[in-house]
Length: 293
Image (tube, rainbow, N blue to C red; front, side):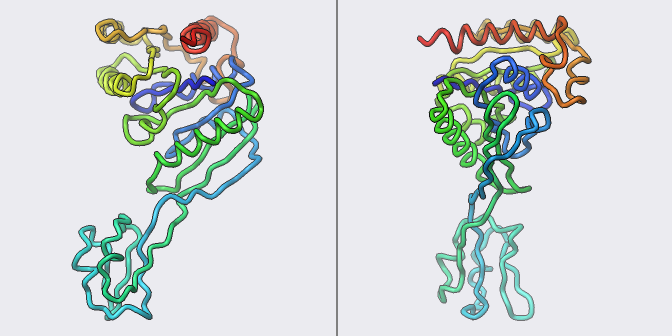
């Protein structure tokens, strides 16, 4: 089974729009939205949920007032100032609690529980391009890497059941924990960037991450005609670091019009821009799917 992930090192480069177009071209394909903090692939694919599951991803301390003697040791030891005292009672501020369990460990009365908490939901769905695994963390919740790993496991198991050989994932932005969880063991990473200093900087960071994990990668420069000098700089960087440049895409308002209609650009339009994306997908297939060695 092959796994292709589309990542960018930063948000706003066109990663999700390209993932939707690739899903259309690869259809039917197992689709995975691994941007669990701020997913938006569903806005284009309109998945019909077939399963909904609770994601339990962390713990928060909770003081039992019946057992608590208000000795204040928990408040003294909490480095996050999550223990508050009022009218002789201590309680945990859940917005400050980091779930470190120091208070639980040192409470002399055993008055602090440490229950697992719900951090979000994950879903199995159907789309017009194939089955889809996706999720949504609640605001400010953590353990996104754990949720990403869960989605990838579910995607693989479901793909095996229905005999699909390819998983296409829309990855998270940045280079943090969810990206690392997304990258480990994938067959190929498509790195989408834009010809700006910040785009180049973030490309270098995420390309370095791929190199560290031994993940083969190729670069697509989106809106390449808006800054030819920066585009040349990106190509020089890729050449110097032996990274394949899959291709370039010029700025074209058609991709915005497709987004407004909640459609993949390749199903919305059959013009020159969509043909360029088809060429890019053909190139990715040659490198990541057909060439299995």
